[in-house]
Length: 484
Length: 95
Image (cartoon, rainbow over all chains, first blue to last red; front, top):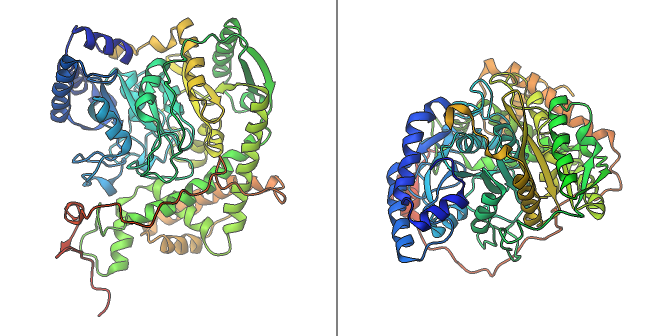
């Protein structure tokens, strides 16, 4: 049961091969037995899951079920879940029982999906290795000495370890695609504004976007059908029709123009990762794609610009955690300033404090033009690079991450080294474009991801391009031996 | 660019963050490294470039100025550290 995709499970449930309760129990039993090795869940919601599964079984029996009815899913602990602890990986929210549901959560509830629990993540989604979580690091199911990537590390690990058929993630600078690559699964970061951010705890509001993480592109499409759409409650949500993401999966790729940016294959890219990506590109040639060399000349600006924009927005967003209305409050504050400073000083971890301080600095009097405006100008240049590229090509391909998963503890002492692991993913967030990561090989036992970047609102094409590759390769079907 | 101890103290105060004395040297070192990275932006001339406000050049959506939320104060205050008579309690601000 635990090796089936959502598409397969949905069919089995419809045919009565097993019930949603049986399926949910199978996953809950696996989580209890195997998750202590991986640490991928912060909260497991067994009672609520079984109750939802019983309701789903009733819907299936009554003939009112949809594709996701009765399907167990894991939700990143950044999405508010009514009545259930929502921590964002932080001590600050260790006592926070959300009083409402995020729109993504209510969309899945309406579809009849079953939530197994909340997945571990870097604190407030700030990290590339899942090591900044207050709840401890997640281990990579392919190699327990390696990081799973981040910030959606728990969400990637649950799918790789078969502790959920699929999960949700959020991506501010690569936080869906990089862990998807490092854990050998499929993940999609949609266009900025495509999926509602309501109830998704904010990190950097001009970059944050939620998306699906699953074994296959086909499953990501099924999840996108439930996740995407306009939401009045999110002021940045985009009013635009949502296509049926499953409908175009089988379109042939003959004539597809694939751009390879030379900057994504330059210095800093691991040779073995480069070879695996090249083999994937050769496969696309066989499928009829035309490969075009392109350039995104301002790629080098993306990490510097990101580390102004994201911390600036985070320092503003995280000012709401003040020890007054919810979340952590320090003991015996002597006055209001002491309450603010110690609640925040004790409630936030080191990386979060670092980013709040960077943000406070770049936004402080006299520095705004030199940093924030300069970064927004750099962002314009990065965005123009993509606009010009998409006049010539349909999609852009390259590696998702410059290396495979690194070892736990390897990069924790030097934040700048850690930041460089998002070198190929950050530019798409700065430009607001959709991007995917698809498993395309291994270096040793650690997985490699192929990144596919699309034009605005071209998620259906990305899913089609990924699905066709998965019809001709089997990397996405591999599972780590200890979790088969 | 090098960040000084006094910068850390100033921005920690601006951000209302208590930073332990022992951690200050590490913040000085790490933030200096981050600002060295950020300084790479200066290698590109952006004088004639418009700052990007939104990837799709959209403007903020507006709505009519009418109340749409119902009063859920009691529900929301259940998770507050300290409340009294519907108010959030903090240490005395005015003597």
